[in-house]
Image (tube, rainbow, N blue to C red; front, top):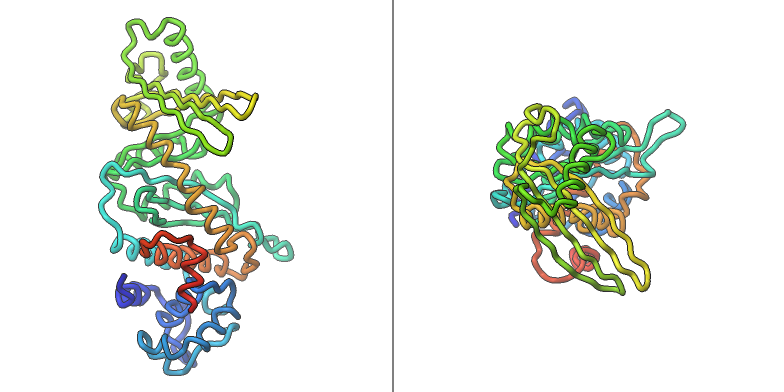
Length: 360
């Protein structure tokens, strides 16, 4: 990965400071912060310490004419950077790294940075909504909201940032909204949206369709079927997927732009002597290809296991107490850029070990 490419993109972030009295270039501060977080830094004092310890190395890439900023300067400046512009920098830089997304899954999901709340100022914890390219293993972009319920408004804002042409966008039930389906199709993507009680009528219609179809062994009903079994750690899972493009029982299907198929997925889990069965329902703009749809849904969980879990455990995102103004969202963007940088290393070692090696 070219560090000069990263620095070039960092130079597009508008500086919120007035020129008078400005001692440190913003793009250089951003570069120092990302390198510090790659190497294990968690807060502003860690970033300052990294800068002082690695000054000779940093000077190979940036001038730092007035030395390394102190932690209060990092905190003050990063609290004022406009997150919208910084998010665009993240997206543009990530786009320069990744391949095209044809038929690849882009999973969208949110998580809360739990300690970013500020009770004294009545500020809720920041809820981060990310888009994750599951095959390439990078976060394509992110936006923040004050509460989880605002994911409905955050998802269209996130989609607006992304090039999802040719991608399969997967979202949980919170994102099962007509406007979101319309936006995905208008941007050249396909959608696979979970349907639950927030779309009560649609949920009941799909559930009733598959209940009747199964009872009659799908006699006269067009459908496709796929199943897979895997196991480990004492658990065995049987996953089954039924897909049909018969929409005659769906009320006003034309209101969902691009709606082509309805889906039922069943997961049967065996753990020792215990067995459980869960059924879930979906709508999609994809043709009724059960294997493709089942694998797309399976890939969706990569955002939890390979992105959010790593950010929590390895980057300690949930423990961060940075909360001043825009500081919580901006350091989340820095973590994401550090994460994407480390993902460019294709050696088969953990993210934690990559950070240790980077710090040496």
